[in-house]
Amino acid sequence: MKLCNIIAAMAFLVSPAVAATLRHDASYNFATNLPLTSFACSDGANGLITKYRVQNVAQLRQRLRPNIYIAASPSIPGWNSPQCGSCFKARNPQNNKSITFVGVDTSRNTGNVVTGGDAFRNLSPSGSLAEGHLTVYITTLPTRDCFR
Image (cartoon, rainbow, N blue to C red):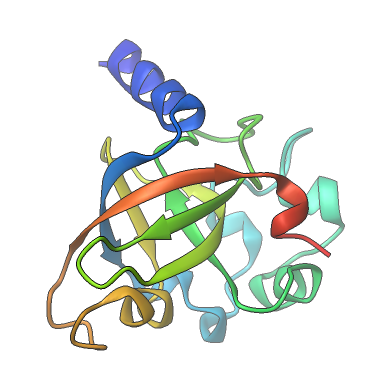
């Protein structure tokens, strides 16, 4: 099972655009202001606390460019992953809307990206959470596209 997760994470990072299922969870809303220790990309050499000297979601948001979201990503297999803080673009092929997000956590389910409700609503055809999940295409971006 771990080998499958590692292979899926590698494909997610090297492919030009990978199909994924987008879901939402309030944990990834900036308004929750959770401590970064709530996520896989907390501390350790590759953690966001270590890299950016921030302790919570609000402090991390100040280090991000405008309109960047946070999410759980299949590219992050677990705690202290070198992929922590990777930058991605998610595009909904139904309406061609896109968002940019930083991976802060493991998504636990291969092929799922989990964002907060605000990010989900921006991609949703209805502009709400009603769909529950969306099929999106994920592209890896340079880190500088997400961070100031």
